[in-house]
Length: 269
Image (tube, rainbow, N blue to C red):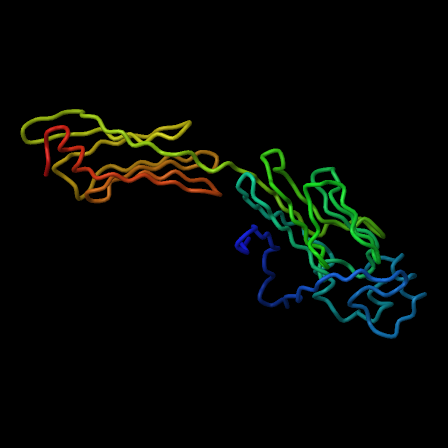
């Protein structure tokens, strides 16, 4: 997954080093009857139409592409599920290149669970079925706009005809940014020679606490709680208390000097 400055970009995981990476091609609508991009030159229209109705192995044979084992592997589709995390309200681009699509395909689409978002027909313009998706110009890439938590789920690109086949899948999770943090200090015990403070870090729905000695600012307790990918951590770093709150899409931090609070409670190192 990457970022172009405005949108998150989801990409298929790189293939093994031994497999050549196909170059990404932009999509140009083809006139009806023309051979799909990537076919061998000199093949007649009749042969192309016949090949489209056959299985992938036969279609490759008829179009003179029998030696391209790497392309066959790509066209077999991917059962891998790529996890993508997006902050609420952001856009996400899902990529699908010409090289990912079998050459005999006539109809393919992007789908969210059982809902068809956009259809591609060979030689025709894409047909979108929802206002929350945009097909990027001259490509099969789609932009999911203004994502909300209800848009979390499985997004699938697959061929429908001549034979149904999954091309790639993304498991998209939409999350809110983490909440603001609040650090509070209180005295646990205090003498003329020692002060022990309790420090608590609070977020909207959780809190975590440690104890520290004012006369010992070289080390101290640290705690970290993680649940469902959301972490809340507090620790002492020399003269500072630091609290971090993070999930897969955002992070917040609060920092305070220990000395200021030790003075308040009657002890400074």
